[in-house]
Length: 190
Image 1 (spheres, rainbow, N blue to C red):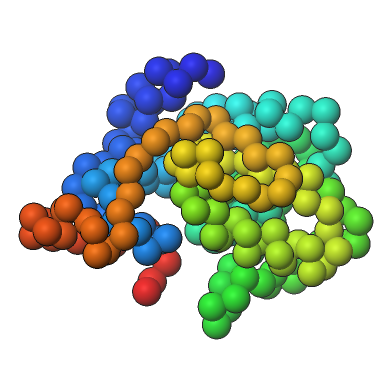
Image 2: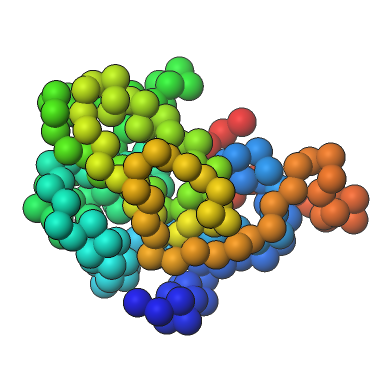
C-alpha cells in the first residue's frame, strides 16, 4: 500500500484532524490522528490489518495483543489475518494488565499492535506485561508510526505508514502561546 493511498483513505474517513491537541504522550500537536475512524468500517479495518499482517509474514504468531482502546479492534483483525488468538491489555489502577480471563502462556509468540505510535509508551507497557508472563514478543506493528523513527522497542517494529507530525512540550508549544484552545481527544484520561 503506497503512502498516497493511505493518506487518501485517511482524508476520506476524517482520520487526520487539525487544531491544538494534547496527545496521550503529554505532548502538544497541531495534528491528531483519530485511527478509530478506520475501525467504523470493516472494509478498511480489514485492509489495514491485512497490510500489517503481511509485514510479519513468515513469523510464527500465537497471540496478537494491543492496548485498550486503540489496539483492541486492530489486534482482533490482525489475529484473524494470521490465524492467532486476539487479546487486549487494559489499565487497572494505572497498570497494564490482562483481565477477563485472558492469558498468555509461557513461550507463546506474541505480536503487539497499536493504531498509532508516537512515543511508544502504551506499547512498551504491553511488552513489559507480555515479558512478565514469559511470552515471546516477536515484533510490534502499528497502522501509523508518528515517532519519526525514534521509538525503539528492541524487537522489529513495522507500520503501514510513517508520518512526521510535529509535537511540542507544553512550555515551548506555539499553539499555547497563540491562545488556541487545547483539546484532549484520546482515550486515556489525565
